[in-house]
Amino acid sequence: WFKVHWDGDFPGSSPENSCAANKCKAHPNGSCVCKTSVSESAVFDSIVNVDKEQVMGQLFLGAIGPEANSNSTNGNGFIAHVVNGLIDTSTVFEVEDKGRTFFLKNIVSEVHLNGWEGVPTIFEA
Image 1: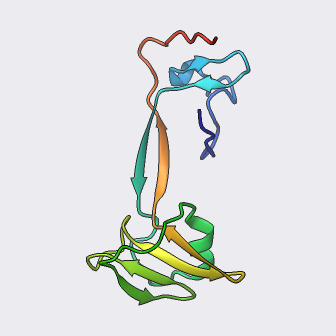
Image 2: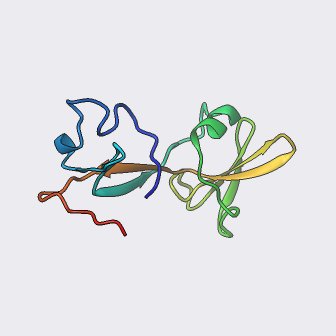
C-alpha cells in the first residue's frame, strides 16, 4: 500500500469514477484496491527560464548527490548537475534553502490504474 496524490478525482470518489468503473476492488473501508503501473519522466528538459522556486515546488525526490561524471551548470538560484549534456531524468538539481543543501532528482513519477479483467478477491488475516 502507498498513498497517491491524485491528479483529479480518485477512484471511488463519485459514481462515475467508482472502483468498478476503474476495474478495481472495493475495500470495506471505502478505498479501492487497484492494479497499477508506474512511469517516470523528466520534469524539466531545459533550465532556461527555470528558477529556484520552480525547482523546489516541482521536484520531490531526493538524490544522494550528483553523479561523478556530471557537469555543473549554474541556473537561477540553483546548480544543475547534467550528464551527457542533456537535461533529463539523470539530472540532479542542487538548491540551497534555509541554510541547507538539497539535491533533487529531475523526475516525476506517475501511477497509472491498469484495472483487472477479473477483479481479485482479497483475504486479510
